[in-house]
Length: 397
Image 1 (cartoon, rainbow, N blue to C red):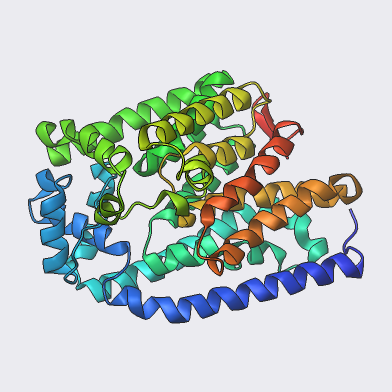
Image 2: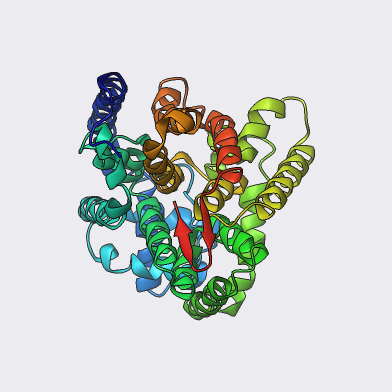
């Protein structure tokens, strides 16, 4: 592999990354003060942590209780940001709830930044093939990708999700499938991503991976039941149905803070393409059917963690742009492999760079992040027909 590529590709990529970095910094400067005032997703995590710490864990999935505590602890708002994750995650935020909201937000921002550095260090050994584009390129994947900036600004837990996904990838690369499955279970606080990946590994008959995931998943579920109590946990399913299904009017979407058109997945793509023509039930049925077909297609491909991550993002019924941070894994690994044989990998490399730049472009086009799914579909097809795979206990990338 050459130490450098011809000047033209390197210049184009450097210019793109510079423009994206400037955009991220500008967005952070404008948005962080707003988030510090309480208008950020961190309010739900901070409040959930406080409710667990103060003995109100049984009300985690009560919308009115969430609204009361968020208004009392953070800032007055007309609607709540519902906490819709398994309760074990709320316990992790209990220590931060000992601080004021502003102090806790600043502490979590710093923690997220440290976790981002950890994610970079974990994935760096497999990104060194990007050095011909510039030794800065691996770092650029982390600091120039808009979902990372949004996760930092919103005080979201998506960077924790990214760390987990990279840890799973590293474990698979080392042939430690049981550990990889166990680590994936830690991502069940966003089960809409973890479960599709586990299902694909089940279809690919990676039994050790599935066993690790199942064992750790049951333990985390038991911990969550213990935290909130049986009665509250039994209401969790209905709570999720309300947040996902009963959103046929603008008032309902505003109440629960759920906007399908901003979701970079099949649900968001279906919403912007047919939302005005189909009923809510028909739109949901279409989304579920398309998601099922995509998973079936992926299940028949060679086992690939990059493929599984992309498929999980597309079929996640509830996913926002900050959750797209997990695309750093497949984009980085596929780009690193493409550099080895760029003349035959130009389409996949170009598609990866388009996906990388798309969130920033869409931010300035009305935040129509659902269009990201349109670019992700051909990328998924390229991975599925390629040789990026998990095979005989190792990953070939």
